Length: 199
Image (cartoon, rainbow, N blue to C red; front, side, top):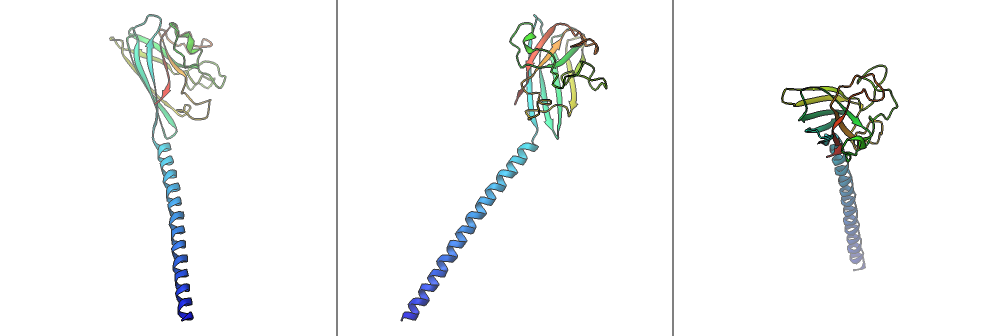
């Protein structure tokens, strides 16, 4: 009788230990799956395109309006500005250092965004240029324009302050950037301003 009881006890112990081990394995597997799902979600978020936008406000009694949209994908930022309400002809557009469009003359946005301390110049010039030196664009007879460019020298919300455009502002000038005059190309009055905000 003792042998039967002992056998039953051993069988029950083995079943209990087996169940406990199985439960532990399931828990470990569940933790691994949760971590793996979190890693995959983080990777997907990183791979998704980041966007930022600036809504342009009229400055210095201009009639300007528009939006500037930035999209970052595969390490490159594309910009598309849609601007209206300007006289026909050429005008300058730049990124400025401060995300502040509160003043009526747009000067609250500060100077050109120039984190690397270069001279003002044409984008891509060997002699140097500001990270905010976008350049000139042309409006049609109705005062409308679209400005597009792409670069790997900008980023949207990254940790590199030499590349991060979020919190800066877009300024549109009534004049033309001559790419020579320091510190800002003698582009004239600021007629539009918009703060770049991550979407």
